[in-house]
Amino acid sequence: MTHPISTQQQLRCKSLPQLKRIYSKIGCTVAVQDRRCKDSWRSAIARYQSCQLQKVTRPAPDEQAIAQDELNQYVAEQAQAVAPTDPLTSRDRCIIGEIIEVDPESIRTLWLEGGITVWVQLVDGGRLPFERNWFAKRVAEVKATLPESPRERNERLSEELETACQKYGLTHGEIDWLSFSTTLYVNRQRVGFVSCNLQGQWYSRRSQLGGSRTAVDIDAAIAALGIRQSVAA
Image (cartoon, rainbow, N blue to C red; front, side, top):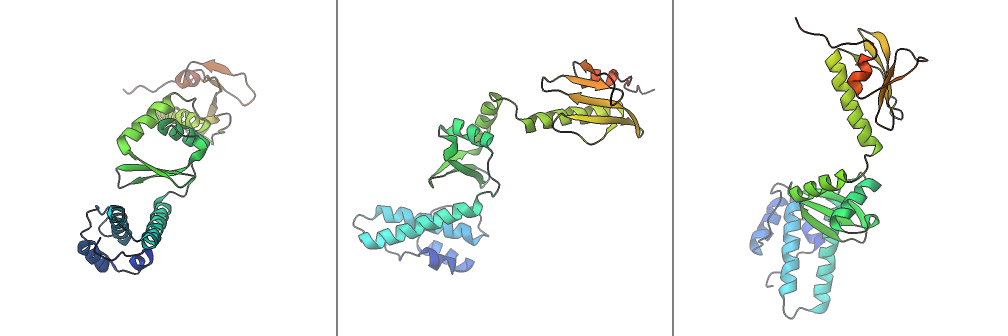
């Protein structure tokens, strides 16, 4: 490697035009993800220098170790900069762990780079890249084998409720997410209550203290309240 190594600190002090000149001068061949972003140019230069250092047959041990440490630190900081701040749930980690065959607790986070590569960051500092479409397909496959989470259940039932309300010309009150129950209205007049139990059975009742009637689906539960879908003339 005939060109001097630009350290992390030196790269941080460079302007965008200066980074472009360094990129051209050293003959860098690493693709720049975002040509308008200085961090993308710094990352490309750092990765290229790292590769070139590994090709040197007789490097100076101390110089190479220092440069490599700085490059490793820079790459790690870049990973922190693009990683999402929201933590993964235990369910998310179980799904990812199943896909990449690691202990779920060893997974720190993940993010999408360039709309193409899914990066999984491990607790020990390691990172694993995966092709986005393949990863998304595997997530769907693994999720299909897991029990429905409370959030997924509520989202599904909420969608069924909204569809039914639109179909029958109804509105609903605030939803009790723990029991998934709500009040139904027609023209602001209360017509009854609907709920869905943990066994997936819809049921309805006309009054708060009235008897409940179970139904095969939300349409049947609404019909039990005496509500019918209007037929256009």
